Length: 130
Image 1 (cartoon, rainbow, N blue to C red):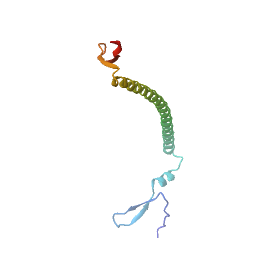
Image 2 (cartoon, one colour; image 1 turned 90 degrees about the vertical axis):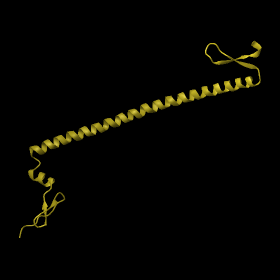
Image 3 (cartoon, helix red, strand yellow; image 1 turned 60 degrees about the vertical axis):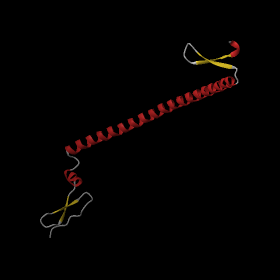
């Protein structure tokens, strides 16, 4: 009777097409262990893998640094834009007040609206000046 082999996690099964029975086959990990870790191919693969991992991690760190820089830049831009909005809001408020004050005097009949020859806009002048 043939000796039975204990299966490990890296073993797999293959089905024999003639009799339909499953037989254990050695996985890639087992085959590599049989060759030994002293093999030149193994050392080359490990070196390439180590370089690839190092490159991948550095790329990840660089992307994180760029993201942090972009966040700082966007926050500064956002603060600047918020200040600009405040300034423009104050300016709008002043202009509204001026407009409403002017509209009140026009409604009372103290002013007349005349076309301006300079810029084709209308300007108000007091009736008393005419």
